[in-house]
Image: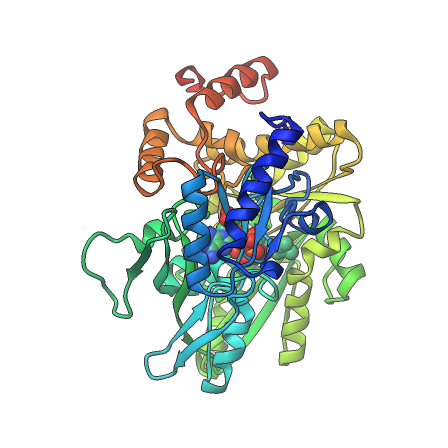
Length: 497
Ligand SMILES: Cc1cc2nc3c(=O)[nH]c(=O)nc-3n(C[C@H](O)[C@H](O)[C@H](O)COP(=O)(O)OP(=O)(O)OC[C@H]3O[C@@H](n4cnc5c(N)ncnc54)[C@H](O)[C@@H]3O)c2cc1C
């Protein structure tokens, strides 16, 4: 990833001086960082395997400054990478070596909470959890709950179309955002969506959600708020066999139940988590399911009973239902801390993110077990089972280049196996730089060209977050050739590269 710069050190320094001078005219001195020790904290996001120093970091405090920074960068033809909290797991906020990283953390104001309309207007740098905290006095909350919700921003959530444990029932970011406001790459104001259920014209709100900072910079978001359920209870079900656990997920949904959350963890994952947070998980189980019901007490009682019947019929070896809010939160604390817990069992991990049809869950998990042997690396699995959204965590040591290379191949194999099984290369973490090659497998050249055409319509010079998300024809051609040589997967349609 750290390819040599296409310019000399002296040329870079001259470019940096030019950009700093231009931005000094529109930002106060404290909002501009360019010295090495200042830009280092911005060199990567949650995908720490890839790092790159930005030319300059700009930290605007209001929309007028965002507009002015974008105008200056556009005039100088400087790439701009928007950044929220930098928790992304696909390298979406990884800096451009000759670009400006536009840090939006200072946009952290809740503009308004409207309990009657059940909406909140918030600036893009507001943390996901802070929205629910602001809405709580009105008995409301913001439903999409990424495990990173304590830190990640709503701007980042919009850019990645983030999901979470409760998105199976309440929808992803896309289903919970009504309106976004921001600026084009030229610094012109834009607003898509409306406070009403529908908005006139083409639906560009849905184009913005999930566009990974490639089409515009979002500065304000209006979200839907959801009434807090009266009661929630969680079932922890143990299985002595991965296939039975995977099939139980499909059986639950097929029975017509939409759980408030339906998550799965395999044995290596529960072992790592249990040591860390003592959630009370069954360590003898090959896999556990966490299955939540929420609603009125009567609804919850009835649904829990139906869920238990399906889980038993699917071969659950143990079932425990939370008897108190404390116990429910303890069950979830393990799931929510799964990624940090992995840091206790390995120096580094790479978190994959693909989706598969629910009925293929067990097939993919068994294929991943075989890949552990093939690549000589361990993998722990934790995921949004109800959505078919996998999060295999490949454990490796980033200080060993050979392990990193095997980890990358292992990850690509998982993503492409998911595609082969009818799934997709991303569920909620976005493509960023991580899944560029796998996009070549998922989409045809014609499909990718349509995506590039949309990008050009918003950003003709390709200055917003360049080099991310949509691979070029050339890259796909090279990947196709490498793929055949390595023989990682025999894709029937590889000829199209
Ligand atoms: C421990 C951990 C757990 C996680 N769990 C989940 C999970 O359960 N579900 C999930 O979906 N994700 C999860 N993530 C991934 C990550 O938290 C989300 O992708 C989140 O939405 C990123 O938000 P951020 O503010 O950190 O964005 P950043 O990482 O700063 O940026 C992400 C992308 O958004 C763009 N961007 C940021 N702000 C703006 C803006 N204002 N305008 C335009 N573009 C912008 C950036 O350019 C980049 O492409 C997890 C990450 C970690 C580290």
